[in-house]
Amino acid sequence: MTEGSELGDVYGVTIERIKAQGGDKSRLGMAALMWVSHAERPLRADELCHALGVKLGSSDFNASNAPSILTLIRCRQGLITVDKEASTMRLIHFTLQEYLSAHQDIFSGPHSAMAEICLTFLNSQQIKALSADPSPDTQNTPFLEYCSVYWGAHAKREFLDCVRSPAVELLKENDGWVPTELLLKQATGMYFPRFENFALFSELHRASFFGIVEVVATLIEMECYNINEGDFLGRTLVAWAADNGHEEVLRILLRREEVSSDKPDTRGKIPLVYAAKCGYSRIVKLPLEREEVILDKLDNYGRTPLLHPA
Image 1 (cartoon, rainbow, N blue to C red):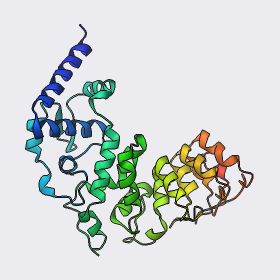
Image 2 (image 1 turned 180 degrees about the horizontal axis):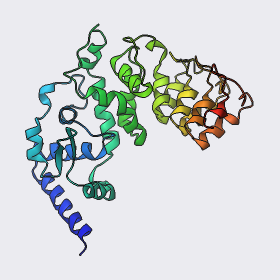
Image 3 (image 1 turned 120 degrees about the vertical axis):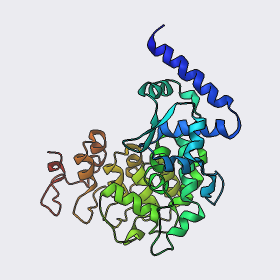
Image 4 (image 1 turned 135 degrees about the vertical axis):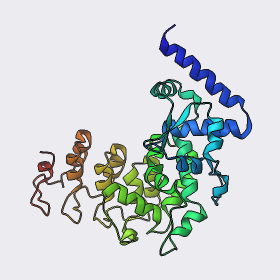
């Protein structure tokens, strides 16, 4: 028997022990294992606890529902530990990640479940109330930053029907919202005065930014958007999809005759620039299928689209 198979047997038995605890211990133990093994980045202990405290279907988030880290330690059966240097949660060994990747039936739709949890949290009355506060205190909402930045990544990885409704609800919220601010700061590295100009970053811009095909298609079908409108940076839906490498969203957009593939942003950059500078060879070809794209069109800095990757 090899060492790898022996470890696999140990992990399998331990996971069965977590399930056999029953009740909240079993639920919390498996949920914690799902989050730590599938999160887009390592989670801090307080983030993980709040993630496990979200009640699906509820419009309220009650922090008292979040388990303590001591409770999680009692439920984890030794498979999750705290990285003391980084102050984040991690699996006990890299071979456990390999085991979970090889046994994907352990969790049912993990990314869709995590997206739904993030969306439920962001749609809660407590988070919506932050936008009405001129000086919002986000220190008591440690899960806010992760949800704002990564809910779309989970939804893109795995989109089930349970995600569609809360996703559309979130995206149709009032502009100038705290999660939008966190998302844009993370994505662009820019500092924004509170909510300034966010009104132009529409729900369709956000869906195109994340590259969630199902949500983009749903919003376009509503036919209540100017799909060539630039946001606060002058970027169109096509530009965001190209910049983030979302091929399928770009195909959906460019199949529509009314969509411009050559509209420049405030810096004079057309969508082709973003696809080219990121090295997305397959995506670069999509705008080039349109006759309107001018390869030697200069931006505000005197650069052509193909000069950026060069």
